[in-house]
Length: 78
Length: 326
Image (cartoon, each protein chain N blue to C red):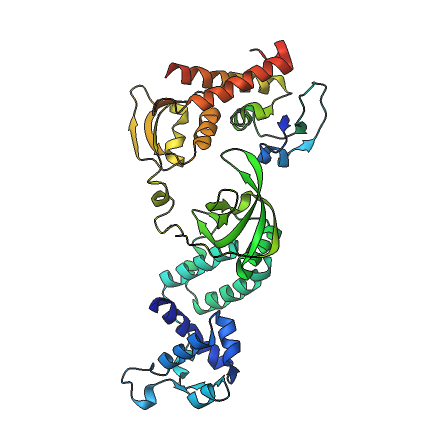
């Protein structure tokens, strides 16, 4: 995960510093964070919106992107 | 000082004075956190207490000449208070659970005292099985943090607090004057005057990332601490109401958070109305539910979640390009 500095402390403290080839904007750190399953991971990550970016695995990133899209669609439908 | 507080103190004073014959007034006052004048008033009341009948031989005896002269206390004729304590099962369980709850926020330096009290109480409860029938789980701070919070509270010193704000998912740093620590619904909290908010705030102990006790004395604050005897509900009741339509897989929200109203939705799911004190909390919940909740009212309450989600989607597109599109 790429986590914006000072944000999502529950994730950052649980993670281990890691590296990534993705070119990130200033103010983000990379962490390897463990989860029990993708569904609960997506739920936890999505609530942080742009403060947390899933770098890998792609399957988790797809779940998060789908979740964020669903939020936009549900608010716009209201 | 309320009469209830005085009675509570008098009940503790008698066994204390029996164990510390000839103790100085100043030492007793310090041990009970009162001044000598209040202690003298307590002794005047105690002097008139005793067994039914209240004849001279029935009253607790205190050498008032020694109190007013040498400033020491000799207490006698209170032998009935050495009779072993006999508790019913419910009384034993209530006291043991309360002590175990206190242990959860006591901090490492005080746990020994709580453990000793628990041992005595469990011994006084005798063979009553009740004390094993329930356990207490309190989520509080790390030991070192708990110790510093308690230290600041007891010595009346300002705290330099690093705190993870759950609703905004960010770490903040602020100066606070600690006012009380309490346990509610399984979590330990610090209630304090926050100099960043310039208001009273409640901090969950397990979300305190770091704390330092400063040398600054706590300032006097003319505040009303929350009445928590009915849980968080009373504290929430004046917060704005939000009505959500929940998908079937999101109905856990109604079980987890206090709701003002909940009704079944045709086809499954719920419509719930709940109090929301912090818009950031609602935004976080809507994001977390990933489309599982729709805001029915008030209009626009879901907009910040949609904006945050849209910003995140655009960021994925920029950072990860085609790989991020589903």
